[in-house]
Structures are given as C-alpha cells and as structure tokens.
Image 1 (cartoon, rainbow, N blue to C red):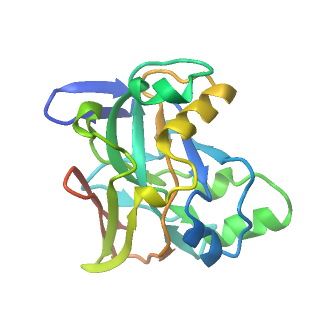
Image 2 (image 1 turned 120 degrees about the vertical axis):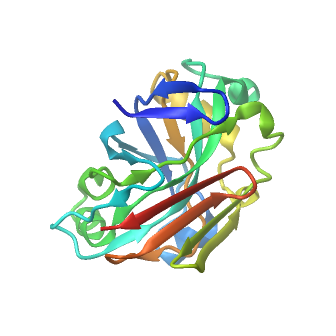
Amino acid sequence: MKTACIMGSGVEYPIGKIVCLARNYVDHIKELGNETPAQPVLFMKPATAVIGSGEEIRIPTYSRECHYEVELALLVGKGGKDIPEESALDHLAGYGVALDMTLRDVQNELKKKGLPWEIAKGFDTSCPLSGFVPADVVADPQNLRLRLEINGELRQDGATDLMINPVSRIIAHISSLFTLEPGDVILTGTPSGVGPVASGDRLRAELVGLATLDVSVK
C-alpha cells in the first residue's frame, strides 16, 4: 500500500485516488500548443504510480519520449462532496511537491485519436511524490515556488500565483465531480519548461523552503 506522510509528525495516509489538473499555467499551455480550457481539465493516476525520494523512474518500453512536469501536490485530510471554495483549504492535511511524468509521444498519439491519456500518465513510477508539510505551515498556497533541476541544471522555476485555477477552486471543482476522501492526492498543474528525461538523469524537485524530492531515471 502506498502512503503519504506528514513530515515531522509520523502521521501517514493510505493514498487513494490521485486527481491531476492539466493546463493550469498559461505559459505551459503555450509551450505545448494547446488551447486554454474553459473548465479545468482532469485526469487520474493510480496509487501504484507513486514512488518516493531515492527511487527510480522506469520509462515503459512503449515510449521513446518521457517528460518531467513539476507540480504542487495537495494531500486531502478531510473528505467531502461539493466543497465550497471558501472553505476548501480546510480540507487539506498538507502540501508537497510531485512530478507528473508523462509519455509525451504516447499522449500526443492518444490526443490525435480522441482517446484517454491514462497509459501516458498513469504508468508505474509516473508519480514521484515528496513528503508533505502540514497545511497550517502554508499561509497562502498561491504564494509558493516550484523548482526542478536535472543533473544540477535548473529546468523549471515557477510561482503558484500564475495558476489559472487557484488551489481553493481546484478542490471545490474536483469535489463537485468526485467525493474527496482522506488520503486522496491532487496535482495542480505544471509551470512552463517541461522537457524529456533520459536514462541516468537525476531529478531534484523542490517546493521551495518546504519540501524536496530526489529521484533518478532507470
């Protein structure tokens, strides 16, 4: 069973569903040539996709182009359905950093055919995930910074105030579609700067000043 931990507390949550937001930063939408969506675009990863610091990303044999995407991760601590936006942050147990590893070649082919993306997004090891800082440590989730280095070179550096849909709206929207439960994880989209990884690469993701994640590519 995959678990998410609140750092420094010993508290762990069995991970349930992982709900992910696509196209939530304008510059990332532009770099992939996508249209800005009228509503949040959602997809899911299974809990089996999760790995932690010190583990390896394994690119499936059916892909030749795996991309990194650094993201703010939310850990649900109190469940709910149709959660109001004004109280949405009260449902979080913690904040962390994640990588949404994406088989870009596979995703592009699926998009052309109008098919779901799950095999490009939900493969084993596709969701490296840090530990979580307690939610009460973060005064404003729209005032955080995400960074990603590969082999010591900075590749992504973005601020959460650039999100199209802020954290409270994301939680409210997802809960209008799916009941949220303790242990669910939400990935909130990636800033610009995504690109490919190769075997031997070492990735360091950071929710600046709060959480770090170190993984490598097999």
